[in-house]
Structures are given as structure tokens and as C-alpha cells.
Length: 114
Image 1: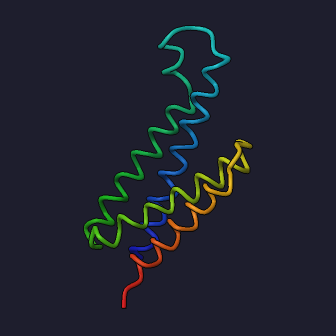
Image 2 (image 1 turned 135 degrees about the horizontal axis):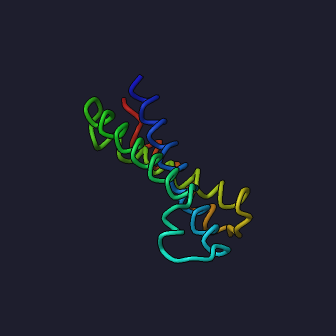
């Protein structure tokens, strides 16, 4: 159960980051000042996702050691890289993929309980 909460916290954090990206993308075409930017639905979705992710993270920390839980958030690097590549069509070079692989290996090593 706790790992499902951890996965949900990671997912919400990633969704929040994606919504932030979509918010700033929408600002490029927006006319108006700061108030128009604050009214962007993507910005509000980002805030909701990040807020809910934070609340779930607090629940996770009540039941799991921070030394185990925190490295799992590194999975966000993997998820966001995949979204950057396949959704936003951003270039991701071999060095970046190698870094993602190292992060995944680190998460496995740190999360592996003997």
C-alpha cells in the first residue's frame, strides 16, 4: 500500500511538472499581463497536482524511512525525460539516456531491501 502512495506521489509530481511546462508554453501566445498568466488553467492544474503530490509524500514519510523513500522520487527524472522526448519532442542525447540508466540503477540499489 505504501509503495502505491509513493508511486502516486511521483506521478502527481510529474504531472505537475508537465502542467508547468504547458502553462509557460501557453504564455507565449497569451496577450495580457501577469493576471492573464495567473488565470492559465495549466498553472492551476500544476498547483493542484504538486499540492496533492506533497500531501501524499507526507503520508509516505509517515510509513517509510526517508532514506528509502527519497531515492524513489528520482524516478521522476526517468518519467520526465520520457515525456520530454515523446510528448514535447525535445532532443535527448545518449549521455542523457546514460544518466537516466544510472539513476534507475541507483534507485534499484537504494530501494532494494535485503
